[in-house]
Structure formats: structure tokens, C-alpha cells
Length: 172
Image (cartoon, rainbow, N blue to C red; front, top):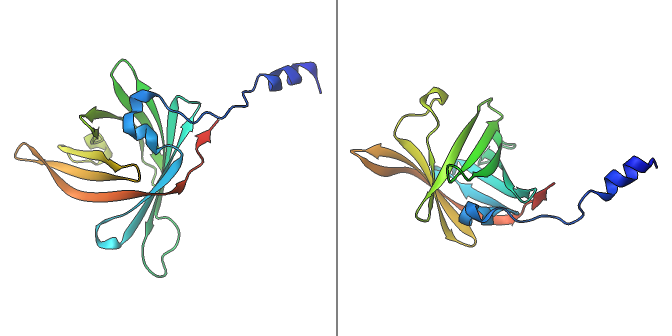
């Protein structure tokens, strides 16, 4: 083995990093597991898996699959990478999906709720829309899609996600 390769291999860390920055709050505790939810009406199943990357980032995957007989395989898949932005005091993320959509957005805590404002109108989202995530307990969280009606946020749809098993835990 060439000397420079042996030195390079010796420099690769062997410890697996499973933590994310504390600033991720309870959202960071989702890392290392997959979470499943069923959309209202039971027609769509949603699985989201989260993992730590380099102890500084979180990766997320999503697979939406139609429920019922004769329907197999995801109808939509997507990935995201989340990072803490210390200047803006919020979580930034880049997302992309099998439908070709991609973009950059952010989430921030309002009390215990993690709020993701809607994507810009150019991405096809209506103004006055947001997604609110709330931790229920160590085994579940709720995602609510909300719209603004008469100056107040109103739930339009809710999905409860329950822990469904271990994800990859880390991506180095």
C-alpha cells in the first residue's frame, strides 16, 4: 500500500457520530429512526426517515405510497439535508424530490412547535400557508398543514407520525 494512502486511511475517524446540534431541539431526536403516518382518508401512507450526518447535519427521506390493494411502490420520493443557521437562529434545509421540485427553505421554533413557512408562490404554494410540527411524545409527532383564515392559522390537514423502526442512524 502506498505510504500516502496508509496515512489518509489512518486519518479517517472510526467513531460513528449519532448526534446533531442541540439547536435542532426535539427535531434532532428524530434522527436514527423512521416515522410512519397515514394521510386523512387512509389513501396515502407516508414514511419519513432521519439520520445524522457528520454530527452537524440531518438528512431526511420521504416516501409517499398509495394505500390499498394493487398499489405498490412509492408515488413520490424526496430527500432533504438540514443544517443549523446560527446567524438567523433557524434550521435551513435543501430539498429535492422525484417530481423534479427542489428548493431551499427554513424552519424555526415558535415555543415547542417547529414551523416551516410555505414555499415561495413560484413553487406553486398559496400565500398564507405553513406546516407546523409538534412533538407528542418520544414515539410520535404531529404535522399540521395550516392556512391563514381571517388572520388566524387553521388546520387543513393533520398527520400523526409514529416511530416505525431504526433508520440508518448516521451518514458519514
